[in-house]
Structures are given as C-alpha cells and as structure tokens.
Length: 111
Length: 116
Image (cartoon, rainbow over all chains, first blue to last red; front, side, top):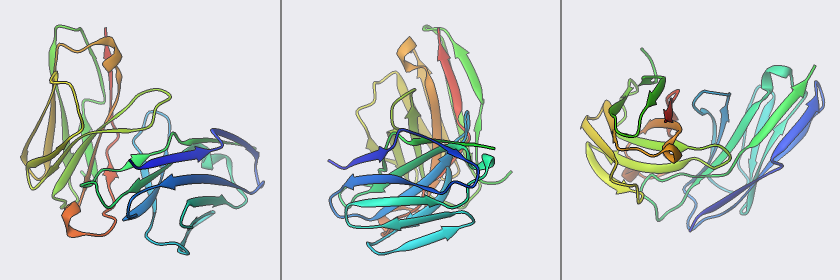
C-alpha cells in the first residue's frame, strides 16, 4: 500500500526566511510525485510533477526535488502570500489513477 | 468557464434529504475523480471514471452514488447521509491514466457539505 508522510505538520516563517518542506513516501513503482498548494476553502492548485529521482523543478520562489524515498519543497525568501497548505501525493504503478496524499504542511509566513 | 468547476459551492442537508453535486471539466480530459477531504485527514479517493466507465470504487458506502454521463460531466448523488459525511468534496480530472506516465490531476474548488 502506498504511503505518504509530510513534515512538519505546521511551519511558521518570517518573510524572507527560507525553509524546506519534506514528503517521505513508499510506493510500488513510482509513476509520479505531485505537489499541490491549497488555500482555505478551495481546491488544491497544481504546482509540480516529478517523475524520477534526481529531478528538480522550479516556479517563482518554489523548488521541488525528488530522491528515491522523499521529496523536498524548498521555499526561498517567502512572502505572506505563500501562506497555504502544501500537499504531496504519489501515484504508484499498481493503482489506476489513484493518488495517495499526505496530510499536508500548513505554512504561515509573517510579514 | 475554464478548468474544473463544481456546483454548488456550499450545501447543507438533513439526513433524509437527497441532493446531487455537479462537476464539469473544460480541459479536454477523459478521466474524472471524486475525492473527500475531512478535517485533519488526507484527501481520500472515492471514485474514478475513465471514458465514462467507473474503473475504481474505493470502498465507498452506497449512500454515495456517482454518475458520469460524458467525459466532461460528473455527478455525485447523495442520500440518507450521516453527520460524519460532512466534508469538502473535490472533483478532479486528468488524461486517461492508462495512457501511462504520471498523469497530473487538476482539481475543482470543491463543495463544502454539511449534514445536520
């Protein structure tokens, strides 16, 4: 059974204070690892898809990296508008389209 | 309209009511999904439809009944719900998962359901 664990559960940063969110996973035949951002009362917004270990992707202040056991979402010089819940999910080789999600990391960036 | 839309955005219903949630995708995808998001719990997959056929039912109680009349529309019919069914119900769409690769899913804004 695929499993995803995200840490920390909550993270408070000052504006400009860089940090990283962790996503540890176990999966049978990784098809893809996904990062989403979710604002309160809204649906998840797609950020990145990573396919294989060593891959990196960037978007504005966010950079996602992938190893065989975990993924990191690095946030460089965050701003208050980066405050949200960040979700990690995996798709394994044995599931038809099913994504297994972690519980998310609640990020708060103070001005 | 763009992306994935869901109606209604908020719904309050009694345990004896029957209601339906609607989802529409404007992305040209051919797979659609229903997820449940409860407080303090990860998103849980409920149903997967690909090419209008149900391909996965993730042990969901029969009081939830999905319907996919075409590749752009998905419904979730609700009846005799329980208070513990209160949650955010999210619809997503993607290309056919059988096409291989990661196949990114795009989500709608969700319907906040409260069962009294």
